[in-house]
Image 1 (cartoon, rainbow, N blue to C red):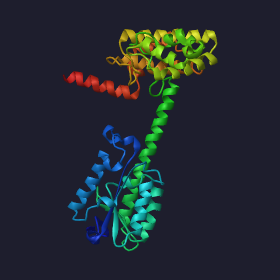
Image 2: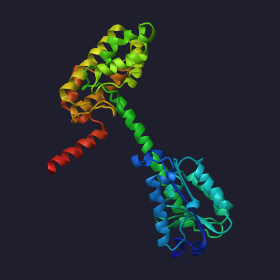
Image 3: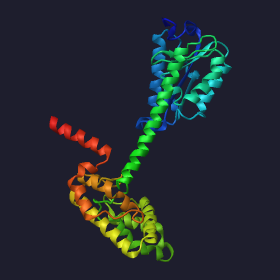
Length: 351
């Protein structure tokens, strides 16, 4: 324990003979591909690293390490006050006979919400159970050992994490609103399959009459297989044909014949541009392929995506606008693509 004036930092001496209870957590969206291979949280690499880091830090501090039975690990948001393992940990340590403390890597692993953090710590504090964060060596106080500065630091870090989450969420919403105001689609839409042997939409339109055939000849399965076969390779998977059917029925129901023809011709023109460019900005992970990156094509699809997806809601982009997008494509790229392009150009210059 380091004493600086009236400020105490680091673990208390009595903790060397106490029982540690460990808590490790990661949010669902922070898992890696390796993590997703394991259903048991205790076997997920990222959580195994958290546990190893905690025990390594405890060893350096000459404190007892967390036994396997005293680890509480889960995949959950730190803003969720009803986390199962979080609640189980608190109950287990309150039921424990003897001195004990909770240990995490950082305060934000305990909670990313100040109110929830304070509420969860209150019963532990009354029973003389502190919470120790190995990164920074911050230990919360108890009724017998106040540690007001460290309490403040712990809650400050939890609050900062919560504020960061709020800011990120607001930024994401603001970016999506800005993109829509610009006429741009946030994220990706459906591929136009520029590498397919036949346009899936044309394959569907030419064979949708299959559904009107009697008996087994007129099944959705046969239509799916037909579209998939006609568009292969790099065409539409059979499982995606039903989604295409629903989208086409919605367009036909909401557009007049003239409006539908205008949309269809526009879509064909965009698809032909992608074929010439040899790039599919919205390539899927199944049977399509992206081809070499073509930045004008990526900017183009970003700016026409809303109309392609919901032509009854959005106006058809003019030819003059399309020409401007293709000429000044950098201005129309998404923020993510701008960063990717800058990094790509930077690498080429270094070579």
